[in-house]
Image (cartoon, rainbow, N blue to C red; front, side, top):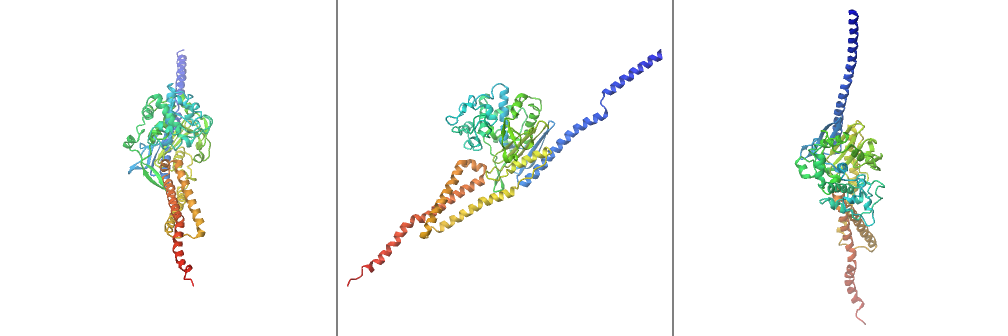
Length: 529
């Protein structure tokens, strides 16, 4: 009996031990788990290295002095700088850059935070918050809602409220909005998508009127500070003290350093300042469903879902190689990366930015470079945008696209503008030499045609600059603006010089006829026999 009991308990103990062993993960399972973590860390390291390498190679190829990139993977933010940030300073992941239209996502986020708090209704008329917003008489201004602003479906287009909001460059958001007081909508509100900076200037005013803070103060207190974006700014002075990168504009293909453009009037549409590292923290918040790294709730998951939901087809054309995209609120969806990727480019006259994140892949990329080429001429490859896009491709492990030939574009551009300028100068020189010479009768008609042609052409060039706005043209395409203005002046002066001999012809003829008639008079009145 005793033996039987011992055997019984032996069997029980054996069964319990076996059960306990089954509950402990096998060594192979532990190794796989650790390998998965290592794979995630290793892939993140490879991702930032690929992005850094491609950024360096392409900046050198194009001639852009510097930039920075951040990659977010597994909640970890890694940032690197490449090249020069100005005045001999090396660009780093903490170097601030003006981020252009990537600022629009911050404005949309600010509005959605106020929706969370019940202070803003997306479908309320904009005039409920900004009563001074006016359009041309008869336009349905009261039908434009806050949602329409954020989704770029207000009916305003890029001419009535786009990049040409230049007269308010040193003014206020109210002055920028006043520029469209006579605007006519290109479509009914909510009907179709059209990119317009004034939509987000208005959205920034909504934030101000509801919160009681300036837009800049609101973003600093409610977005930058909670996300610990310590190298992000809303004004140039503190950014300059923090090592703000210089900007660069291309003059006939050569990058020329300039103080980066930063406008308070249109801050909510395109002139916030941030570093690659800080932008990585910002994108990490989206991947975390609205939470900061320390767990602070920045925006509700429901509001974030509303913000990122695609609303309307958006057309990026050559930028996205013709691939379809949609617009959400301050973000594009799709484009070159597919429907699950959220992105927004940003351009100022002298810097370029691209923010991108993929919730499905749990990865994000932020790239900033200190140059831009937005010259509005056919064939412009927008090369700085291609650079930032290729860095994103590299970070995501996708093929890097071949850059268009920047050198060939500017060779053609230089010939296209310098040859007419040279011919115009040659024509001016010839006209100045011919001022004192007589004109043959058979050439008078051709001289008149030449005067008229030059006058009409000069007037057309002046009208072009007036349409674009001299300040805007000089800011966005200084080399082209200079050539157009010089051509107009030279052609006008040439027309005046060629007109002078025509105006003097009658007086010259009379002066020449007077002595001749006196010489002939004695012969006709000779002595009579």
